[in-house]
Length: 130
Image 1 (cartoon, rainbow, N blue to C red):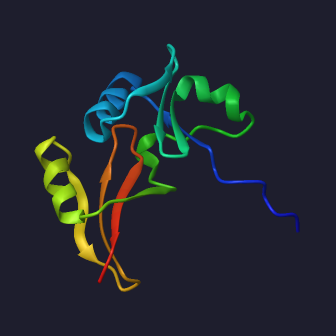
Image 2 (cartoon, one colour; image 1 turned 180 degrees about the vertical axis):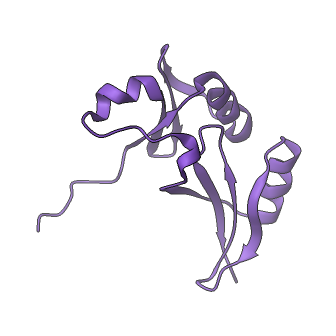
Image 3 (tube, helix red, strand yellow; image 1 turned 30 degrees about the horizontal axis):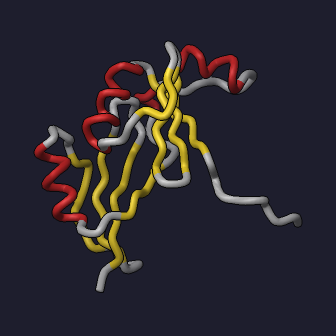
């Protein structure tokens, strides 16, 4: 099997309410917008771009596959490393973010907490234990 040429550079998340999700990413992550148009807003997390794309525009992008609705359940989780999960949870809560779970210590050696963005995507924050 051939070795893949590099890291994942972009992840496209389908969103029903681009304005609300864009505002969430600006407020919660504090990142500038790298690119935007009427159908998308792109943010850079270190070496990875997160593209928020209107669900209606995603149809032609993935055809013949279908775009799932946000209420159909999560099929992925995006993880961000942080220095202190508890402090980050306090900051997120102060910004109005509702935690799904955590902070909690996981048996595989990390402390985590999770939350959902307005598009229904699950984000996890994590720090190594010990």
